[in-house]
Image 1 (cartoon, rainbow, N blue to C red):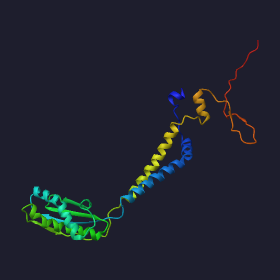
Image 2 (image 1 turned 90 degrees about the horizontal axis):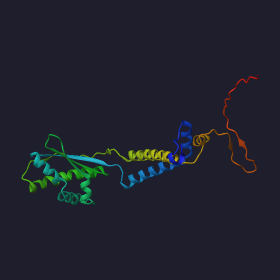
Image 3 (image 1 turned 45 degrees about the horizontal axis):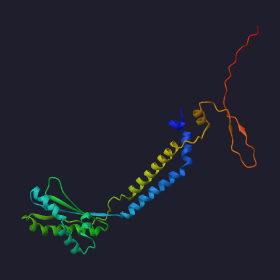
Image 4 (image 1 turned 90 degrees about the vertical axis):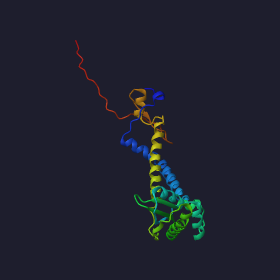
Length: 239
């Protein structure tokens, strides 16, 4: 088999695999550190600090068609601008809209307004104020008066589940897997001969000996490989 045309297939056993990993372990560690660092940077840039959620429930006594329309009004810019002005918030309507989530509870006339914020008191205040401003806004949109607060938002001191640890763990595992994959790819495309066995596979002949590396002050020695040779014995007859 020609090595340059077919890239002689490599055989891995536990010993050779262990040697390969030890040889390039530094590369796996380096890539893992880089990926984990990137994950940490991502969490910092995206403000992964603890967040709190508060919710208020509003009853909309109207048909589903009108109820869906009013749910859109809750996050309308006019409603959010009023909320920002009343609470003195230092943020844009776009930012506030991302904090507010509106959902209709299945098979009911109840609409849930949830707000996520880094401050639990602020989350409750925004939720309650949004509901209040929305109820005042309804008559100017639709001729419906059956809108009222079912339950006000309470301060929730328990933070939401933080994804920071999950992101860091995922980045660590991805870095380790990428590093391991890279060293296997590097070894696969490495065409240098490393062992006597590879020489025998390449030449299709048995290796008789090898020359050790020359060291300072020492003479190059000839080393015969330790192999068991089988001799065939025959009886010779003399006439």
